[in-house]
Length: 448
Ligand SMILES: Cc1cc2nc3c(=O)[nH]c(=O)nc-3n(C[C@H](O)[C@H](O)[C@H](O)COP(=O)(O)OP(=O)(O)OC[C@H]3O[C@@H](n4cnc5c(N)ncnc54)[C@H](O)[C@@H]3O)c2cc1C
Ligand SMILES: NC(=O)c1ccc[n+]([C@@H]2O[C@H](COP(=O)([O-])OP(=O)(O)OC[C@H]3O[C@@H](n4cnc5c(N)ncnc54)[C@H](O)[C@@H]3O)[C@@H](O)[C@H]2O)c1
Image 1: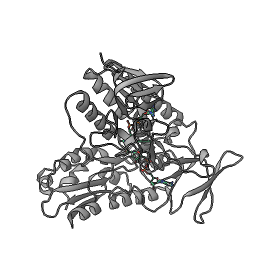
Image 2: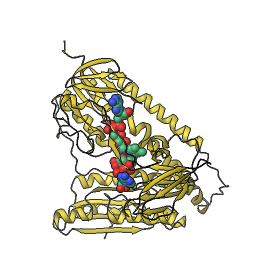
Image 3: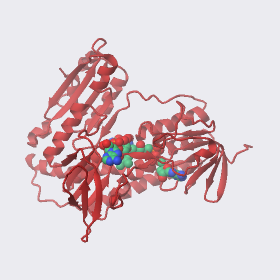
Image 4: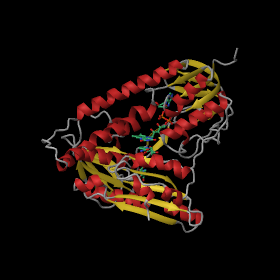
């Protein structure tokens, strides 16, 4: 008999926590997972999954317009938000249910409440104390909302999926992932979208030419950008609309909705980690080593709460590596090199490996190749939107160091190409691959 109630107690049933719980359970460990909201976490309930479904739904606005150029007699169409919203929420509920079933099938005990750490081997849920050989903190992150008068009148990505009605005008704070994805979504739903950003750089971590192409296309579509400013105050007016004031001499603007997309901070408030001697970094994240272990030998942390890479597949890998290493006797570590990522903006962009600036800093002058083209579908649709692919290549070895793209289906194309970049293939090996014609992806092997 173990001296503890559980071999593993997981706090948070999101991407990282569910993977770690079910894999540890499958290895025969006695596992409990506590979740204060809904099984599935951010990705399933109010992140990647419903977001992607809204991206699909929103894109019909352009598809239906383009269809006429392809010979379809499309009558004037009406978009009914509650239908899309409720269908998306229904699918989310089904996925949540299947996550619960997976936990049960792997003998993981589910506790639907908030848990806090009370010591190296103990947690508290409500009035009940539990002990565990290992504790895994997988509590994710939460929207970081700037503090200024009236900020409470804005919403975050937590609320955006359940709106009663769609705004006709929306101001989005931030110019990162969520801001650009929802700018595309709301614009296609017919709203006037304004993005407000402290600098004039959007999606800073992406390749400059690619993000500049997104900015140019977004502006051409009618999305408005207010750069070098921040919101200073929001007032709610008698008719329910909002008046937003900006720093730096910009006139106030009336709007129906404000969405904060200003980053996500680790969910560590009141989590009791100090009871185990764990101190947070200045972003509130839990510091961990390469095995996701904290300074306390019995406590580990994975996913957004560690603020390493805030992406679902990374949280899942960290959870899997933890469970394999600790409960499966198969130790391995997550490799953070060449993580592909995408922004589901309109059009979407995606990238893997080094940007040109990063590559030049690391290796000196690198070679770059680009393909700047109008996708065939856009030609017939008479849509003046060009795709751009960019490859960064080591000047001596010819190894492809980075691949970046914007255009239709860029995330789908990049996932496959990321295998080649991760495998350190050379430009010549790309070129030796026969093009698949006609496709957009063939540009990858035809770049000059
Ligand atoms: C709008 C949006 C879109 C996104 N889109 C993408 C995308 O397209 N691709 C991508 O890779 N990533 C995307 N992400 C990021 C992705 O959702 C996260 O990186 C991922 O969910 C992190 O997983 P996690 O396990 O660390 O945390 P989470 O999935 O957030 O899970 C943490 C869980 O812990 C629970 N919890 C917190 N504190 C406690 C406590 N004390 N007790 C019990 N339970 C607790 C929370 O309720 C939550 O369910 C998106 C995020 C957002 C917000
Ligand atoms: N497609 C995807 O994979 C995807 C989609 C959505 C979210 N995510 C993940 O979720 C994380 C959070 O998304 P996000 O868009 O909120 O963050 P982000 O880090 O991508 O962007 C935050 C933006 O807010 C700005 N900002 C920060 N503080 C501010 C302040 N006080 N006032 C004004 N502007 C401020 C930043 O300059 C930046 O433009 C992302 O970093 C990403 O890891 C991923």
